[in-house]
Image 1 (cartoon, one colour):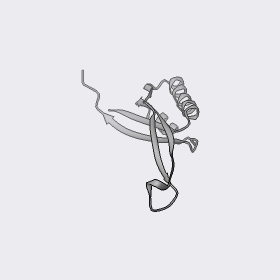
Image 2 (cartoon, helix red, strand yellow):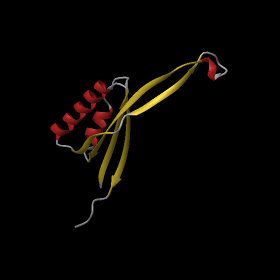
Image 3 (cartoon, helix red, strand yellow):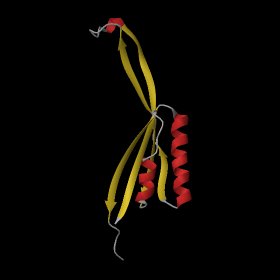
Image 4 (cartoon, rainbow, N blue to C red):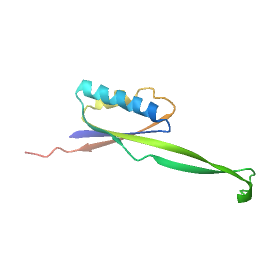
Length: 109
């Protein structure tokens, strides 16, 4: 059975995100981990309305707060110990990390 670890990284700071993902990809290459990625998704643009009063009156509105979220994805095949080591790291607060683990059966030959 082969275990697949899917890692998703999100941040509003592209430089920090790329540094974190680049470091992880380099660690995987050095340790001989089979991986796909990093894949870059289209940045998500968000607009948050801001009001001067709590009643939400559209006439009393500040300009919307706009921000961008960048996302990178990696898939690691096997090497559960390396995936565990990666997830035990202390990531910057600006980077959100999500991990999904899946087990797949290898086809019989």
